[in-house]
Amino acid sequence: MALLSIAAACSSSRSTNTSPKPSDAGSTTIPTATTASTTPTLPVSSEAIPVTTGPVHGGTPDRPVNAMPTELRTKYNYTEQEFFFSGTATAFQSVGQWTTNGKWRVTPSMHAPYTTRMIVRAPRDPAKFNGTVVVEWLNESGGQDADPDFGFAGPELLRDGFAHVGVSAQAIGTVGGSGLVLPIPGYSPKPLVKANPVRYKSLVHPGDDYSYDIFSQAAQAVRHPNGAKPLGALNAQRVIATGESQSAFRLVTYINAIAPVAKVFDGYMVHSRGNNGAALNAQPAAAIPAVVHIRDDLQLPVMTIATETDLFGLSFFNARQPDTAMLRTWEMAGTAHADQSTLDYGIASGHTYSPGTPAPDFSSLCGHINDGPQRFVVRRAFAALQEWVVHGTAPSHAPPLTISGSAIARDSNGNALGGYRTPDVDVPTRTLDGTFDTSKSVICSLFGSTTPFTSATLHALYPTHTDYVAKVEASANAAARDGRLLPPDATEIIDIAKEA
Image (tube, rainbow, N blue to C red; front, side):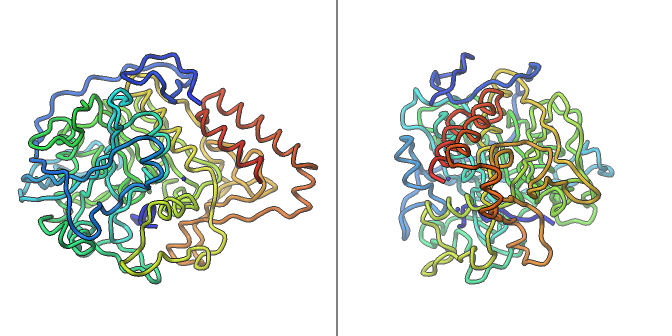
């Protein structure tokens, strides 16, 4: 069940790091206290290089679908431009029987022309660029493009000098068609060619069989521009792939089957996957096993992060596997597949679900949705992956969420035990639950829930507001010291406690 993030269709001090980083002496990335491993040099790819045109202008409005919030662009002094890229994409067919271990092989099958787009966010000051480009497989589950990972991690990516490229890799968000669309009251999803017909009239997509190669070619356009230069004068030293939810399912298949052939990325962030991968193509012979692991012979780093919802709602529990030299998994306590920060990002972006209609009120639709710490952990995960890719320093291991029977074990306040922990669950004021609630609609079940503590419970835990703030400060500062939180996020969490 390849579910969504509705993220961008609707949604948040410098470190003491002494490790050298390219062109970024002020990085907020901090090293983790783990055993270092050597990251291999990426081989030269034979992947096709598309022709890039742009920056794109025109249409009403004269801005990209999924434009970043103006506040972020201004605060961090970033540019945002849209480019089209065109070429001939390859579809693949599986070789042999694909099994759970993920050691899959493919062979080219068909070829077709395409034209799609990318949104490029880059620091205006070249000296700030840290050399790494995060390429996000835009999520299509809502029937149109969404950039959930940028929604969660944008502040870390921008303050640390990353470039971010959002890629319209699939057909449904680009030109429309059948696919996974989760119904939302009042929401009429529109692909790019219908959302802004003048701007996007030249886009052509041959179907999702070709999406894996289109995604590879997007990375090539960033690394080796042919025509317009998406990064301008900036030179991409490293390219990291990321995808959340539906896009994470596709990344699982990409990592296992396409990456060994394409060789265009330096690392991967797999955010909120389920128990298997996405289909390679529409042919029955390309069926995906019910349970899929990330292959254990990885040559490049793969970071997997999972919410409480993903464990049983998307059955990720069945696909759990041990960390390896090139694989880390963090299961985040107190988190839901989508949450309040998801919605906040959409509001800040000025997105609506369809022209002329406001975004749905998810609080009315779903009740008190999860407002947990996912964004802080996602930011930390990107910083950790950057350190891994650049310096070969593997991220810390995190304990899995504790399981009791077929559910997540919880403390006396209802919060999850185990997992990657933050002050939200260690100094709680509410129950943060990511359980996939089958009594709700599919959309609402992805948002989890927040249940505030009673006044009596709060008073028993924290006799005074000063006492509460002191405990949050101690927890957040300890998490920053041991690498579980980035220092700016620890400060933000403390400030939120002071204002509570």
